[in-house]
Amino acid sequence: MSTLFATFVWLMVVYGITQIVADAGITRPLKDRMLTLPVLSFVARMMDCFLCASVWVSFFVSLSVWSPTATVFESDAQFFLDGMFGSACLWFLRGIESLLHD
Image (cartoon, rainbow, N blue to C red; front, side, top):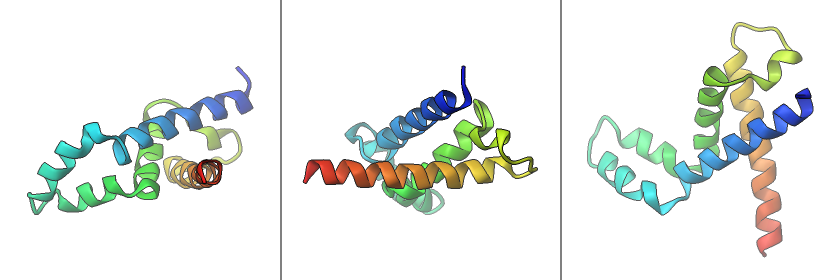
């Protein structure tokens, strides 16, 4: 599989998971419950923010599946670069999506 195609698949996986975490109604009861607990209220607020959630989802997918920036950069903090890359790409895709819906 080419690196470009693998990066595209990685972005679509991150986008899909982020959509479910941040926007889907199925996660609303979990977020509402987390908001009642002082320790988890910060996490629940992060899950409501699409860009915030995309950073954390990118971290997770990078650490558990594949790192798209590993072919370009060699670093001990590869997951951090992937989080920023994923969030920036999803911000761009979300902007295109909002233009298409308006």
